[in-house]
Image 1 (cartoon, helix red, strand yellow):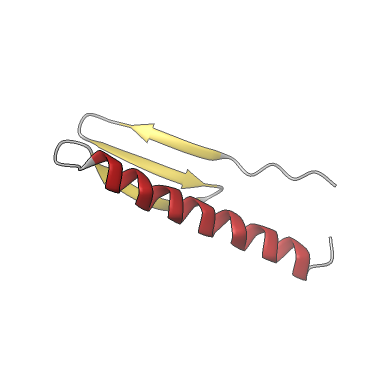
Image 2: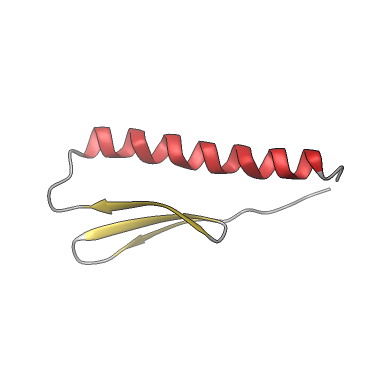
Length: 62
């Protein structure tokens, strides 16, 4: 079985948004951001959301 879960990064003038599937997992104010710590937080949130998708698939028996 193959399931594709899109990870989308939107960049606008002064903020970025990170989506996993249909869920917004992070909004990044780019103008004032300490980029390394923001990226670490985004990585953590994306990994958490992807883990939830795997758990949902496993629990549904797919």
